[in-house]
Image (cartoon, rainbow, N blue to C red; front, side, top):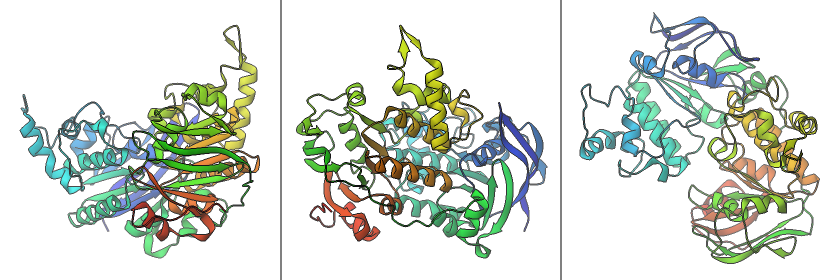
Length: 503
């Protein structure tokens, strides 16, 4: 097969982090090449080098037999290469159509001038339809759920008519139906000779769509395998360089004591939600996009107003909720979008981890830095954050290590109740195992966890019970060890309602 993209000794540093180490390999034309590795392996960095978002320190690339040295994403676009970012780079205050056309050399006319809404609609609608989005192109992007925003990003990349598309975790926030649509598009693009670099941590997707699998570890190229000639076990071994335990159900630490209770709670999204959370329990939450999973955490943490019903913590009714009061009550929240809602992206890892304990670690306005540094150091060890030091800017870390820092923040606080909203989205296999282990350790210590996830296998593995939401209502609560994905999906789709399981 003919190579479309070749790497020769690509090297890249970010401060003290050696992100890419002498990377050399080639990608075949018209194929789906899966790029796999743990967070911090260099996958996203390599994608950004390909598309001109960052420049390598040394080494060279060839695209279609010619030197390829882009200094911006527009340079790469001119060469016929585009990227779909893991952390979406669109403009929430602009319309969907405007997001598709901004900086798009294919859609934007050479002498555009003023473009009417009708013209924008005509340019944008075919590409939205191609990814299965039935909405008005004039809709403000910020009003869409994150899954639809991801599809807009995919539509934008397709509209550029690139010969090589880098897809960095394109399925991390979209439904199974949307994944099927995307994979059909990928098959269509392959038939047209388009090459796809598909970055993902989801092994089932990789073995469904990829032709070849490239594995990276700690910034270095490990090897390439034909998908038909390897196995998930071999790929995992190449990725992590260590043995990963089988996904059996974690030990339960659930006690009889009720720590948290929702009594017919209604918000703008939730409808008479009632459940109890026990000491040491991991309570899973499943549901399709828009089911109200994140809104459950927003109600608990005091972000969304409660219209009816009540929440009680340790038997005491919470009269008035706010994030500040929730923090003092021992309630923690890790939001779905770590970049926009959880982290201060221009601050250091240390500052982000220590954010929730600053108030109790200062004297006369001066932070007790040595004590805080000691606390942060313990979090680095317990969460296995990969960073040169706590002082580096958190935006230089991989998505998985950013997520670990966010988990570490609440470890410092010592929250009794912790709401985890899809904490493993976009996180690699090794980092997922670390997060599962942290969840188990917290439960063992008597902490109570509400664990939202889009991946049913991890709920079945980690949770004691699984609440299933549909359109803001609880359809049922299932014991994790006695249910399966099919039963959960039936409830999530509102096909039948079940009684709660308290055991």
